[in-house]
Image 1 (cartoon, one colour):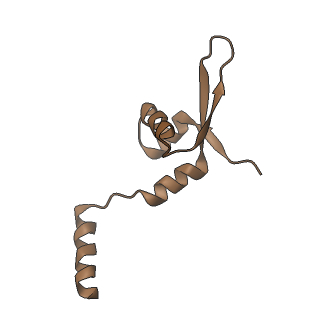
Image 2: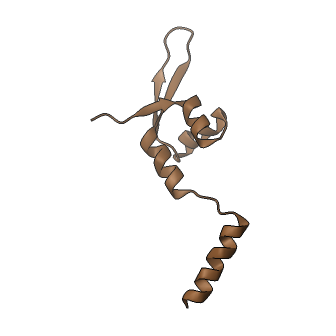
Image 3: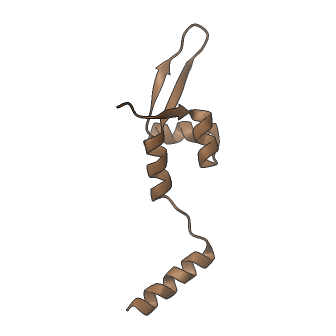
Length: 79
């Protein structure tokens, strides 16, 4: 079965970041994907793995100050 891939612009939209950020994330390994060679004047195009986006979303969550305080309280009462 082949992995589902989306355009860089779609990935940027889904993650709420710029297209340049998606390219950087692919370059540094935070996102998986493929780079396809361009034809003629078209330089190249990239596709981003939906699985890698879902993994990134699952493992990188920023807590609000309220959530952090609540988490600290839970840890204190768990002792």
